Amino acid sequence: MKKTLFAMTALSAFALVAQEATPVASAAPESAPAASEAPAPVKAEAAAEINKAVTTHVKPSAKSIVREDMAAYCKEAGITIGEVTPTDAIYIDGLERVLARSDNPNFVRARTLAYEMAYHRAVAGYVMQKFGVESVKQFSEVFNDQSTDRLTPSADAKTTTQRIIEKTEQLTEAKLDEGLREMGVTPSGTVAEKRRLAANTLVSRSMRNAIGSSAGLLPVQTFEGWNEANQYAIGVVIRGGAETETIAECLRYKMRPGLSRPGAGLSVEEALPSDDELVSQFGVRLFFDKDGVPALLSFGQWGSSYTGTDEEEAEDAMDHAMVQAEAIANEQLTTFINSTITVSESNERGGGKTTDVVFDANGVPTEEKVMGFIDRAAKTSTIQGKDTLIGRSTVLKKVIAHPSSGRKLAVCVRMWSFGQYDAMKRIIEKPQSRPTTPAAPAAPQGTRGKRRGRSYDF
Image (cartoon, rainbow, N blue to C red; front, top):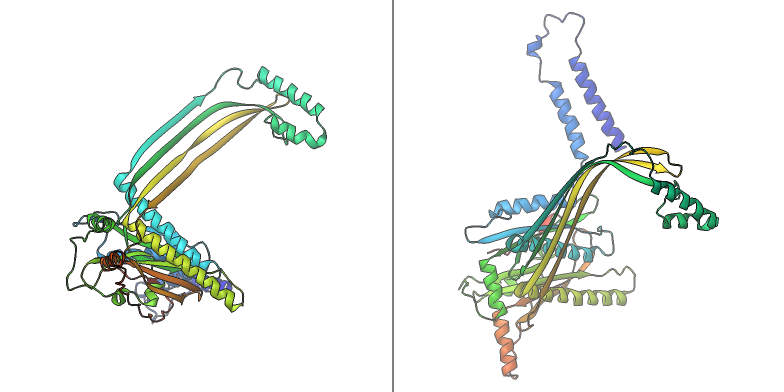
């Protein structure tokens, strides 16, 4: 019905345009305005109506929605992706499609994997830009055979034909195709020989490799977007540079960094986002604690694919999801504090045209012209990290509903702070002293809509 209505609207508009453009045979009344004094043009109105109708039927992809939001954020923050700022910081973005739609039981888990892929892309891009080495190879071939015997089958072709005949005589019908394939012959056509007459090709190959520290690469903003088809995408903007790498190095060696904000820090409760922000919060964030010293929050998310009605099994499944969320949060802290990444990229592209002559089993030539293109790309990245668990604590464990899909997800927030590190050191040195960490309060429920995680850039 919608398509029919759209067609009728467009047709009416075009008819209106045609009517306006058709000359009138009879003389116009004296009261009629001159042609130059015609009222507002109907053509423009009709064209606008058509454009509006067409535009309303174009559905943006989830990736394009996230790209727009990321671009808006960068504009608001004065960030240019890939450029070094006056303070020697650099921002890189990453984007990935969520493989499962919101009605899929694995949707929540697919969101987390999409973030991890987007983060990998961003980190790999940064490390490649900083440490990358590229090797390039191009080769071309121009070939033309104008020999007098180019359309005459060679002795090899006749020999091949005879071998095919001998082979088929020895095979049963069931084994015939297999036997022909063993000889390199397509069963549907007994091609004896292919001779190349001409070729004109160009192929370019490049290989880029990089290995370096990925510690201190800080996600400052995450994004989530979806379209009318329930397709989702996750994006992230990360920050690298001297400041964040220095902070990571200080955390690695458990030395308090010189970067601090006395009197301007936040409590853990103040640093935690609301549920509407929390649902789209992935990865590690840096904030300044109540002592004004850098501290880390790591947001881990995971979900359950259980779709049954047994309450106990559903609860067990969410408990397992929470365990995985905590593991993810820990991994992210380790990656930020001390990790290296190895990246390898390869690209091959090219194409050209070849002309061949194909002789069948009877030696009859057939000329074939083939145009083909090569387009291959591969990329791998491996991140490895190692750090102690001293100085970490859990500040939030919560099961919340994803606002757009309604599916439950387990969220675990782990924190690394010098205060917690000092407290744990006291426990190790003096077991009788056991300070506790206050629990974080629950945050209000969010609402549906395009959303971002809380920004933790500094």
